[in-house]
Structures are given as structure tokens and as C-alpha cells.
Length: 323
Ligand code: DHB
Ligand code: FE
Image (cartoon, rainbow, N blue to C red; front, side):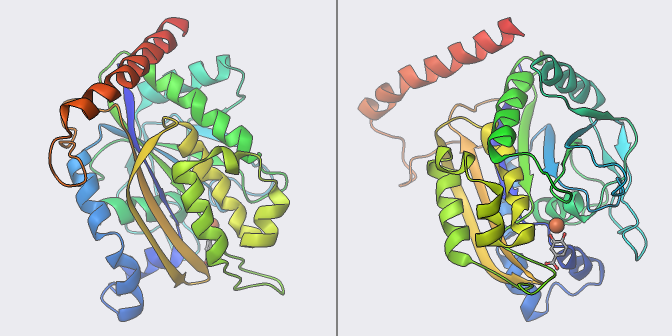
């Protein structure tokens, strides 16, 4: 059975991609940004997922404003980098996972989420910058990546609740896939930013940090937040944060926050980043779990968690059978 082992959220600021491509990562301004992802790259190398699902938004690169699907799942074998005005970024072609993507499309659509199936698509900074932040700049991306594009550029975008519920449906789809795959889910975009109009340059760190706290511990506080609140508090482009709720919906209710980074600014944007692990993970290359002190938990504590683990296994079984 496939399973989602963790979720990663990260901003996707295009200037981060330009800093990498133009070899400027050692400049003090950019060093501050990239230093926050050193531990993340180590975490990712250890987690060593078989597949990633990347929830991101296209910025009129693959879809012009003539045609913007609300949710579009990349089911192709590969996704070349898009030309965003300065030629395509010099990053590897993103290889998809056609079987898992087709399975997710079937499961999620039969669960009444009307995804658009995309068999040919280029991917822009919205996807490739978070991949760089988590994997560095390898010759080939180390695992297949299934892109899930969400419309956050043309009104009306989907609600946070709809995004969260789509995450739930994706989790069910993944858990009903028979092969033993370990999947990491990316939520990308954000945090607070506004790139045009009288409020251009707006950043709201208080809002961003509360969002990170709730994403980690109490996502139900976020799922009913209306669009106007994102716009007012986090700027027009802050709406990108609804995509983080797809990632969060695909995780268990209770997760372990293993890493967080926040810095201001990168270009016009507050950079936020968090890594959340599901507690029931295990599997071939899962890193060893330790209590915070680095020691095994006392037997009583291990026993207390056993029913939760059994319940998680039972839930997974039900999802498999139902599908
Ligand atoms: C910026 C951020 C974005 O998310 C984007 O898509 C374009 C520009 C910026 O901060 O400049
Ligand atoms: Fe953006």
C-alpha cells in the first residue's frame, strides 16, 4: 500500500530560482534565504520518497488566462520547464508517475472532485523553485513528481475548505494504490505578498506565523478562512496559501512538526517553510524515529500510542476496501 509520509510547505518566489540559475546563492541577501533550507535538504535526502505530489500554481505559463482549470492533475510522463520570459529555467525535466497519477485521477474524480486531467504541460517557478529548495540542483530530480496545479491567479480560486477536502481525497487515493510507495506531499506558494497595486510590498509576519502554527497544530482553524481575509491580511498573492491546505488535508490530523523556517523578504515575499511528518510512517527507507531527547520513549508512552497506531492502520484498510 502506498502512503503519504510527510508534507512540506514552501514559498516559490521566482527570484529564488533566478538566484540559483545566476549563481548568486552566496550573496548575503540570498544566503539568508537558502540557509533556511539546508536542514530541509538533509531531511529530504533521508526521507528518500518514492514519489512527490506537488500542489502548486501556474502563473499563466502552461495555462493562459483564456483557460484556467481550478484543479489540474499532471498525468503525463514528463513536464518540461516553461519559458517564463527569459527562456526555460536550466532545471531538469520533471518526470511524472503516470500510474499513480491516473489512479489518483480516478479515485478523486469518482469521489466527486472534478479534476482536469492534463496529459501535456510545462511547469514554471511555482513548481521548480520548491523542488530546488528541497532537492538542491541535481542533474535529474531524484524521484518522480506529480504536479497538481491549483488556480489562485484568476478569481474565483477554490476555498480553503475545498482544498483541504481535496487533500483528504488524495490521501484516500494514495492509500488505495497497491504498490508500496512512500509519498511526500508539497504545498507551495505564499506566504504574505502583494506584487502590484497600492499595497505592493505588503508583508504580514504576524499573520504568517499564526498560519504556520495553525497549519501544524490546528488546521481546522484555517479551513474556513474566507478569501477576503487572505487578501486583507496577507496581500492579493497571499491567496496562494490555500494550496498549503491541500497538503495539510492529505496528512493525518495529528502530525509532528519537524522543521520550520521563516524569513523576510525574498523579492516581494515573506518566505515560509514547514515540514510535517505523519506519525504512522515506517517503511523501507523511513528515518529512525526518536523522542526529542534522542532516546526511545518509556514503555508506558509507547503503549499509550499503540491504539492510535492500530486505529490508523484500520482506517487505512477501510479506505482501501471502499475504493
Ligand atoms: C513574486 C512572488 C510570486 O509568488 C510570484 O509568483 C511572482 C513574484 C515576488 O515576490 O516577486
Ligand atoms: Fe506566485
